[in-house]
Length: 310
Ligand code: GLU
Image (cartoon, rainbow, N blue to C red; front, side, top):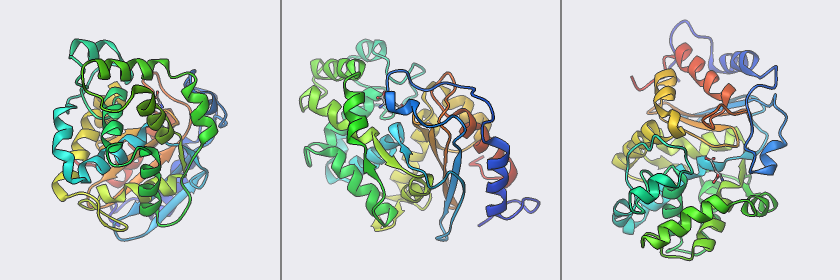
């Protein structure tokens, strides 16, 4: 595992990152519309690094499950691209940063039902719809995929949380109905949103997310062989860099210099191509929906290790 010469061994470095970044005060916010995301204490902070040489380093609350939320969108995209029929996906969703909030309705209407990218909610709904062609229980497919990459049971769908989120999913339903109206959704809007919310409600630890994301750091090769091709791994990394952090992707690229994907559960998956996958989790969010402490910790880690794609 390569780090810069003056940085301590990775285990010690992660412990130091936890000491420096675990929140001491209740700064930041939690999503008002998703009740279960309000329960983790503000001072939870975990980080894990899974390396391409097969090691896993962890510190802090790295073994506590959290709600992966939009980090799931990276995995559903990889699954959709790994299927033989993936050619058609890119006629249904673009690959441009949106510059608007992740659940914006306005842009979708102006752009005739073609979402800007697969990481905003409308784009992720299209990807979920695409996966439902293979099996109507897309969320179960995602869970199987994640369990396979982690190598042991661990990830689970918090069905109670999903039901509660579903009862306040009017906006996602509105997006799905817009997509349907524009002919860009094949399954019923309600069924797609249900699968989407269940995939977002998957609970995983930092260690599990880092292990599951490792295929993106090693040319598409995961725990059970090739998930996607090397070119597709490069492309997903590019979409993470430009679209992975809501409308703060530019700021994250500036501060961290790595492809990343965040979720409103407070998790962030970051990829160091050829080296490792990193997952950091701390539940309080900044105004754009990204983990406040998690982003600061990744900026610090990349400065101290030299990990960056630039
Ligand atoms: N389930 C959340 C929603 O659809 C995911 C949001 C996110 O993590 O970006 O609003």
